[in-house]
Image (spheres, rainbow, N blue to C red):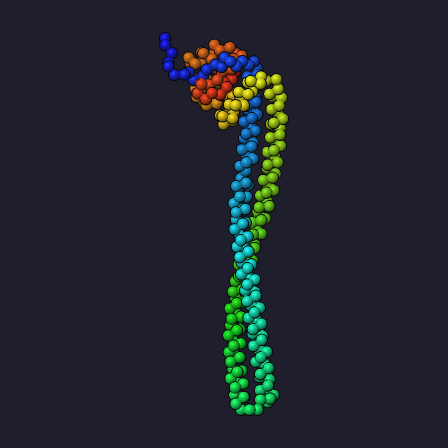
Length: 262
């Protein structure tokens, strides 16, 4: 009976031999490496990290608004001081001229008439300046309220950032401790294993999303999760136990166990 022209799902690697026990240990190494990858993924994607990025952007925006609001307050404070100084200056002049009139220091009727007109003009000027002063005070009050609001928002944002940074660091420290433990276990797991087997495994891990070796379990490759037909299983079963078998579909190392269904 002729075999199909396409390649079988699984194939042997006659050039690579490894003790069956070493192949089984490779599953332990894979489990440790998978756990380490999961921990690194978890560490890099803590919810605090995404939230901190959002808050950092918010802090920068609010800080810019605070800066602008403070400039407005400073400008209006200067404007208010100038108007107050102008009011005071005009009042001093009005009081001086009024005192001269009241003390009878101006006797010439024409000069007295001119002085009274001047006093009326000064009163109008004072009223105008006081209206301007009131308008500036109202603007300053609004600007100060805006600055206080933004400053409070910035303070709250920075407090939340500090809290999240503490939570992130605590979680990362916990994950780092687990990583150290996993990595400490890996050393003894690979001790004494064939270097060529480990080299192949590491190469496949780099190319296959972190999975270089998979158990052949219940007639299925646990790497690509595809089932293996009876003819292919028979071929694998006939392969010597010390020969490394590869999944033809995903190229990962297939490790035979008592649960393989051979």
